[in-house]
Image (cartoon, rainbow, N blue to C red; front, side, top):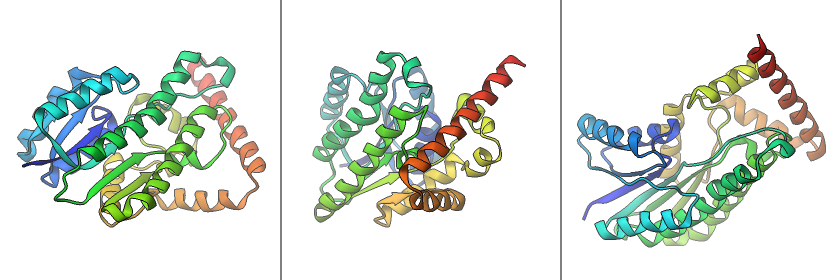
Length: 269
């Protein structure tokens, strides 16, 4: 029986990077994303380039019924997995009182609820003949309380703590859980604009998505629990851990406020 790699958010920039890296390693794939029109050409391209089997099924992971339909399709196909990449996530930002409540609920459902549910279900479909690996995508933001990204950063903190706890809990079962905590990733035009608005810090902390994917997979296979790509990002994480939480929060708030002001000036010019 074939063993597959399951990737959520597969049509996004980081999801595609993980899919390309896994396919290059000769692993068969099962891809899911909210956008069905992007999954078909991605699957076709990866199959032609690497000769691997690529299956796909569109799903809205914020909706429990849609997730149920996804797993029913997996059950119907009789698939088993040796890798799960929980890539799908929401990274919107802005002042808390300016955010639409429905958008906040969507963020929480995708970043937290879907990550937990997909991890639990995937474990029930693991390939018993192989080690099983889970990669959850968090963010460097998850290590801090972040004004103007309050809900997002808190949701990513959940992903970090959840992943580290599962890493220890499931280790005796032959399961490795690795959490990826990147800073900036140039995955789409909006993210590139945010990186540029942060000035030199944003540009020097940004890492290539292909590099992040390769590094994360290598670290996961080596049994590592946490991956922070980029030497400067690891340095910032260490320095941030030395500051009192209230001071770090104030400094971060001022940084994001300046970034938003730059973005407003750019839009008005």
